[in-house]
Length: 283
Length: 282
Image 1 (tube, chains in turn red, brown):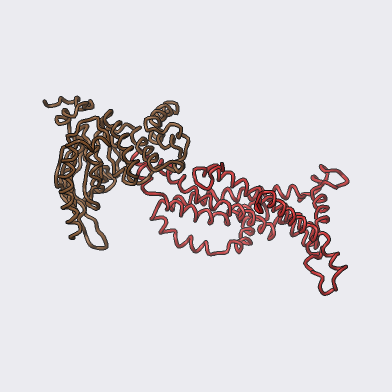
Image 2 (cartoon, rainbow over the protein chains, first blue to last red):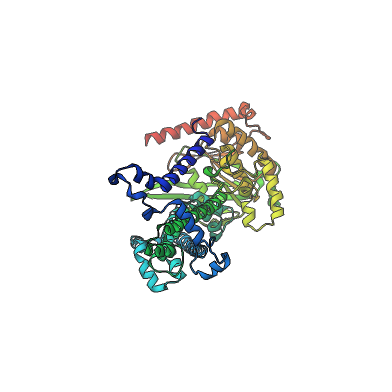
């Protein structure tokens, strides 16, 4: 009874309402009721803004409250909320795509060849030991302030995660399944296409969900350090003006972008891995 | 009396005729040695036998006698250390697949990401057969295996017996003339095993493939085979060779009532017992 769906939904909404109420009015109430020393600084709208201010900033940045109209506002501001979101999303997507494609390819090649795995093994371990974020300034130096450096950063972060999982997945393929495919007439390439890849796919997908989040992190960090546009750039600009509510707008948009990307990867995953027990459609 | 060339290609309908049929599998002086932590041990030692067109031969022996090793060398999955294996007069090369030979594993080697139909149609698919023709052949195989209604299911939704039926059909749909089976029903419970025997007998009695069937189960060997080759304990050597003269069609339950079954069972049981005692004496 206590864990029926309506009860759970009730508590989820109750928590959301409580957080919003405390965020909106908590600071004023505590200033009015508590001695000065006990007023929680963390609730100060100067630092964390408050829902009503964030909503207003959202309308302004999103060109909904501009006197000149939506279209003119969009044209007038190079880094308006929608363009910034689009740019960040686009760079995340390409970084994720290139990173996972090259990670899968390298993982398959090294996973199928003991020789190459042994030759490249130490290099990969060494490269993987570098905190990827440390490379971002170098990437920007090489690729400039434009989108390319953001894509490259996301690529760097995604590649290793996907590579290691694909590599392990390729190694874990059932040898008897490969033998069975060979005995049914499959060539080496057909074995790769019809047995190794589908079998390693579960491992690959296990890495794609974190990888898509990592790609977003990579792009945002790239935008922090040097960019012309994007959500990260929006945050840095707002920080310069000590405008917490604008930062919060960008953060919330990132949250939604992150959720959408995760949903996209997850639905692809549950379709491609529908043969696995945990994705069985519930009765 | 002697089959004219070409006549051997026609499937022998009568078991009496098989005596005159051509040799499909010839194993000559076969040996296999393994190196285990620097020490060499002999798994198979100087084994020779022949399997003729349309024969159902069971390779019977105690666990670890090298019977599966022999089968894997016949299939070209494992290199041999000595001797020769000929299939239709051609030497078997390791790693080279012979399209006339089908192989059924003991372990479940179905592709879990493919449905029953896609598993059964795998060989036809990679051979490049048209989709429509493939579909009709797969549908008839699904029905023949008693899997109607499960065509769209994934292997994990099936019981062990049903999975092994799919594996059998995945091999049989390519119409191999020679069938190598490595304890294919070893992991099944007694009841399911008897049902699989019934299915296999029906198929074989109709199509008469040449079968080499590895098992350690004497009852299974007597139920299915027309000939039993008994191997000694390790190192595997040829011990005895029996004809199983139980009339066909056979029923896997009724066959146990026949006098021939009882006579052979006690004789081979005695012979197998010696081998088990030897294994323990080692």
